[in-house]
Image (cartoon, rainbow, N blue to C red; front, side):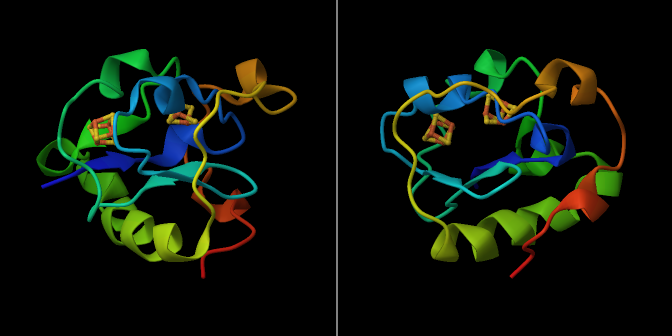
Amino acid sequence: MAFVVTDNCIKCKFTDCVDVCPVDCFHEGPEFLVIDPDECIDCTLCEPECPANAIFAEDEVPDDQKMFIDLNAQLSKDWPVITEVKPPLADADEWNGKLNKYNLISQTK
Ligand code: SF4
Ligand code: F3S
């Protein structure tokens, strides 16, 4: 199992999660982060750190966001590792909590 970044990270990218991951398994794309499931050790540390509540254990991902399980696995192969916290995206607080931001992703592969 692994942890999964889901819809509410999109357009926010608060990056608090990156600070606590002991194995550097977060990868950064233009609008959100993903977790490499092959690297994640299920330590659970990142989940409570996300101000957007966007991180779930794989078996707790909401039904309407199951596609993010494969998306994290795919995109983590292409996107660079991020290891340091950086400022969130502009207007992150406004985007936090908006639903169905999936269509705003510019790169799905
Ligand atoms: Fe990293 Fe732990 Fe979160 Fe997995 S559960 S992404 S190892 S902080
Ligand atoms: Fe995204 Fe939450 Fe991390 S918004 S960048 S998963 S702290």
